[in-house]
Image 1 (cartoon, rainbow, N blue to C red):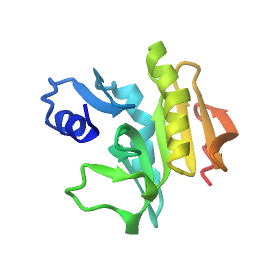
Image 2 (image 1 turned 180 degrees about the vertical axis):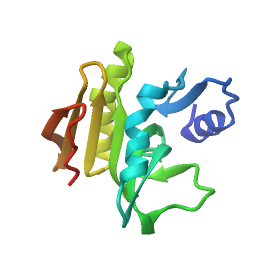
Image 3 (image 1 turned 30 degrees about the vertical axis):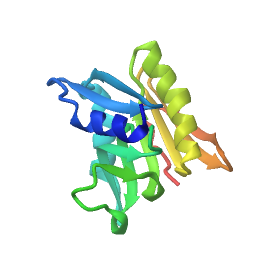
Image 4 (image 1 turned 90 degrees about the vertical axis):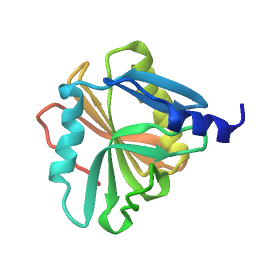
Length: 162
């Protein structure tokens, strides 16, 4: 199936309530909507990101034609906010992406490995992984083509965003 047909199918997919669909590596991945605890880090960024920046939760990202994840939160410059009709925001405007790790092995691998690699390839400068499985957060910064963990902490500690 060509990528245009797959994207059209993904966009037109009638996803039942309580589920969401992402396009990841050319596959449509349907999973349960995250619970309240999973949403807390993204909501915190939305509430506390200072001007001239903005944080948005649950944004679709255009990382590649076959890779359009829904990030738990993204940070952009306010001046770069896309128009309302943009379904997926271009990765080029994203300064930081926040992903809260879920509990399944597949989701853990996806957030720690697959998304880490794809966000780095897209040139997103900062990747923050929040891991409720061990109550830690990990701040990674792009160093060339790969992320390097620059600081980590436990829940309750401030996160020093660059």
